[in-house]
Image (tube, one colour):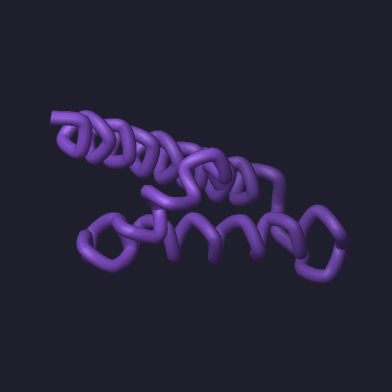
Amino acid sequence: MLHEYRDEIAQLKQSNAHFAKIFERHNELDDRITAIDAGREHLDQLELEKLKKEKLHLKDEAYAIIIDYKKKQGS
């Protein structure tokens, strides 16, 4: 997720507990969705869509935190 911000992500995971939590949850969802898509786990389509929406929401939240962090670092 957001590989172009690798350095910022590393810093935020260490300094921002909320960011670390949403980053970890995003990765958990990504792994689960991958397993479902590969047929290793089964879930109905509606529940899968809920997981994908949650994952996208977390990515958006993480991105906003990264951008805010970058702005503060530039000040």
